[in-house]
Length: 304
Image (cartoon, rainbow, N blue to C red; front, side, top):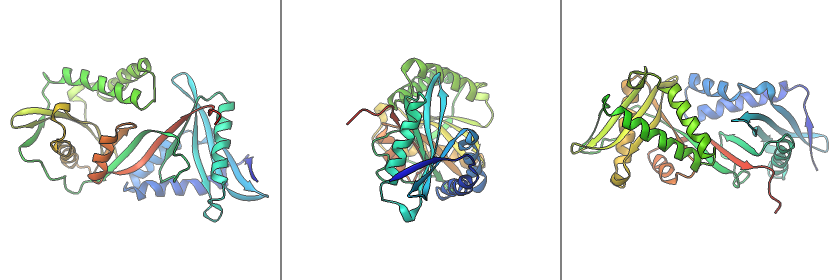
């Protein structure tokens, strides 16, 4: 029978957890400095995590770590770690640990449970909805350009309409992924854009592009350089809906990759929101690997 013993001292667990987390980011292609930044973000509140030893008949099988935090005024749970040693895997301890984590968080008022996966989880979290994927590709050289497609700097006259459109699209992505209500998503969109590009086109380390084919606008791009050491982050590489299906999505990615190289970075990273299967398939075919995947489920679970 699987047992859970909450630890008073998490030192032994941390010695096991921290190298695993760093290694998972480096396996995904991040350099050491970028992997450390990702690690630091994940572990910013690690002192608040509750860690339990997973045991069977007094023998340690692994660990599970959980925390409940405030998320826009509502408590949300998070599984920070769930690890069963390879020798004991596949005996039901993983499912028992997941259930324990869900119950622990629900008892503390959480109505949603999140997990950030940095390696394949098999079937364990199949019934958790995918909220977002972080994808990345090293770009020693950019993807092959599409004939007749160019990317030029956005003008000040084009910026206000682009900004309004991007805010609406961002709200739609958040709501579709099930992350927030429409009202909260609008507030988050306004706040995030104000923080990310406070000086508009003049905001340092940002590139804003208009993508054209045969002299006509077909899309836009916005990337942030040095988001992580050596990594440019693609906030938006967008092709207009009526122009899709012609290979222009790859042209947009090539424009982002070229901008990353021009700024001295060697990788391009995106977030793909859950429910956007078209974008996920495009990035997979273009060689963008999953660095981490966020999933969630509502609490308490409905009785089956």
